[in-house]
Image 1: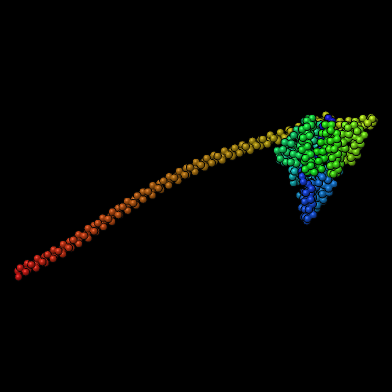
Image 2: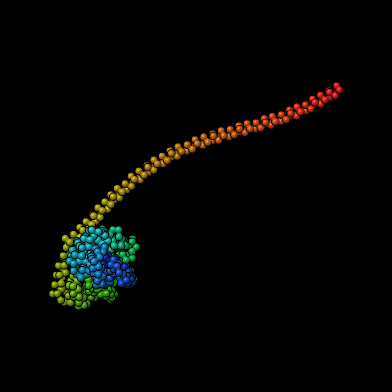
Length: 491
């Protein structure tokens, strides 16, 4: 690994594992005060446990002692009440033991969490447990297990863009530590693409640091500075010690590479201060290595040696990262040589060679490449299976649609036939009604004519009878008059 490429990957596995597990939030002071108020006022175990877990999450990136305190409180109360968050709490408990380098105890709690998850699945919690498990191998050279666990995390988080981005980011860091630059860049770029697509400010902030590293590796230092300055704005906005340590540390390394040593020193000291605030010995150890490297380049060899000795003191208490160990011995050896301490320089050079060989052996590199190949193969198999399933579902949908269309067509024909039959019946009924109306009309006309004839006949009959009666009466009168005249004549 080149002189410049190492610093980004030195200890950042731990930093970004923390970010993955913490699901880090911003504006934490207000959130912490609010959660503490809830904790003081609540009387229910469930609310207390939820609040303690939330507080532990907030303190993970601020103060590890307080994180461990709230995690233990939540675990104790959960065991008493059999709370459903026990798996997550066990995972956090194991994480607390990693901070204190009690790896066996950490894995004990991770196993207990997995026992619960085997009975009641929770993909997000399982991903956190696997991520923690991978982190438990950070202080060894077992990159294969770290990669394997993180690939499990990636598979579990495919439907969770924010955490998936962080998982790819983590994978990029691990590959970077293993000196597999191509694979490292691949996962870092994936992390950025996913976070950008998801429009998640927190995830994008981490991806910005990844891009900064990519540009530094490619010696595009102006672009690297631009992205890291964006990260610095994020630090100033959030005041988050974990983010601020990483950004300041990275900017210090950038300016060290550019030969701007005063600026580099300012940022690296700020990074060390943030590590003190968070009480993270690993971050402190990391800062001592980078400060020692800076003083080496400034030719302050004695001060450089003092920083490396400080690192060694922290390394003994924290069982720090093998990658840090490699680079520390490398630069420490160089500082001792330039200070004229050749025997000590040779001893450190031998240590450097031993540790480096254990990490970057061809066998290990082949194993790591094989792990990635296996992941890609499984991913392709999964994609093929998904495509087959999609094709089957598509064919099934096509058959269903065909049956539905034929059924609708037949139903339409049947409805049309029934409609036509009904129309015929209605037409026939209309014809029948029309004929009946015509008959009734004809009968009405005939009845009217008959009544008219009867009226006329009656009128004629009544008129003739009157006339005949009048004539008869007249004739009778005339006859009587004639008889009277005749009678008078005789007389």
